[in-house]
Image (cartoon, rainbow over all chains, first blue to last red; front, side, top):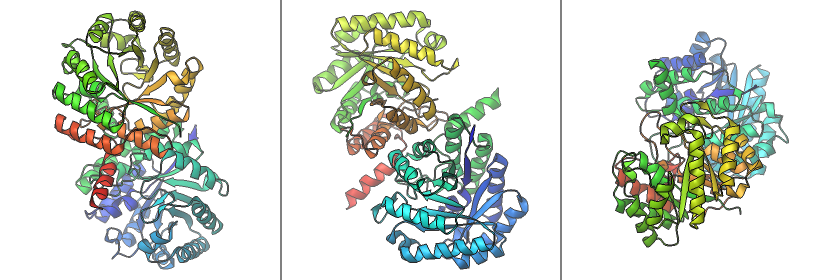
Length: 304
Length: 304
């Protein structure tokens, strides 16, 4: 059976979009529940400006707390630049991720730099992280559509992916940041990017804005992609507001993969425990597209 | 651009599962809104026992009312046997559908007949309908998994599809009645069934119980299927109860198809009007996986 590798990004990409403040202790507990469910890689937090993203202001405390509690877990943290990398290292991070958006405007809106400068900063950060012996991931964000510039040119995605690869990124994560991709586009782009980057280094990060997250994951599986980001409970964006844009839910991805004959090493029951906990921490209903069915199965089994 | 043909089954498969009684007038209006949206084929009602399915007890009034109001629309009605066919004909039906479940137990639970007898009844009904010059569809239900017998043997699906084809059914509809299929299974089964039945005669009927409805539709599109059942708003089962099993939503299918480069002839805006109307008729929130996003797009456009 072929293996799928999942990085759960709920503690970072999920929680950074929430209005409710989540305590460091609750974040550690959520990560612990994910690890107990069998998730082997977590994106835990982000060393960005606490003024820009107050939800991530405890990155310096969270990182060592998770390492102490779960020494065997792969934990990556997002760093925007060399300064963020320095903070991450001081906190004991052993894996970092950089985020490069594939359009000029998105970089300007997100990090107040143009695309050229953002690319250089990502390259410098990756180089320094490698020098320090850290594991690295590089996101190519808005790789399908940009909220400001429309459809992202495929050539740009290929060019930037190749640059991140050349800069030594251990994993290149092609991200449908706003959940605008369709399976046909996923198939086309994830095939094209394999012409320059070995598929083992490629990962996919999907959002479920248009209800196509699961279908997009399937399209990526079909063209050989085996590494995926997902967020337990679909946390991300705001799942209960019109037009909201949650991440592909980890439970949906695992169900799809397992039923499709792949192994994930992840327990759906364990993921439900994590969803339950996240619901109580955020005080709001959560869950991906399969959540009602999964809970029904668990309930019936408990009765039997 | 390749064309996709959609049969909206909300008035039958959707409404037959609702606890709220919907008036004949409201059903006609829902069908009218679907036709206005560009849907060219509707499954309007079912000539089953009014005691068994009270929601469909107005089949005799609804059928002529729809024909009178929308003479150009393809309207099919479900008939369980020759008696149902006779009632449907008296009401002026020009297209009928028979439902044959692919397992012994499902047929017994559903229509109190064994598989062999149910197959013969379907064949007789199809033959008589053809003699009367009606258009015909034949469902092969629980074609992936049966709630009583587990995974349905593929051989049975192939055998029964071939029998329905030999009996002259104009369309053979392979139905994942309980929404248990995954894309890998859809790919395998929809390929296999094409070895004996021309793809132009094949349709697929999907439910979204496990959040894989859209992915399954994509898998079917990829192996050449161009005819789909869907239900506007995902009506069917009970969309707001744990473990509920709504149909694949028409708006999700249309969005998937159009973004994948297929044409459907159906307006997403028109479908939203139908969802809004169905929500008021049923007094409950409805909508497929893409509904929040679609409504957000419409709202932003209205503001501009």
